[in-house]
Length: 195
Image (cartoon, helix red, strand yellow):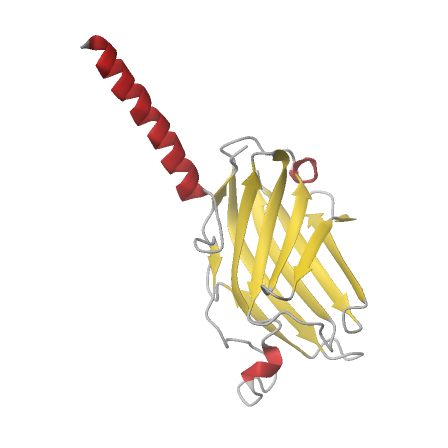
């Protein structure tokens, strides 16, 4: 009888650990950051057809890790329609961990012929190029971040103040532009480092 109780206790602990992982790990169906569609702000945005801004209209963003690559954090950003942009465009995902603000930026200039992904921190104020993918079929940009670039957060560390931005500006006159902030108010959900 004592052996059965110990076995049930161990199984309960394992199920609790698995359930914990599925609740705290983000994915496309359970993103940390969500946003409504057609909510772009900027000059005359209410008069311009929403289809012109679908490339910066953020749907969601989520953080995730792969147990086969525990030294990396992945961050995906989904927009209404990802395409090669006519105007200079920035996609950004921000969060705070351990009192330091981190920003991932994917910048596009010249119809996508010049594009790059970078990470910057409030601690160093330097930007470093990182790997990213630009999937126009799924409308998703994914950043792959070496954890050493974000202070090597330990398992259980929280990424807080999560938010995403899509920004587009007119060429030459970069002070005139449009943006979508996700979420519109406040911040998205926290993400807990898994590995």
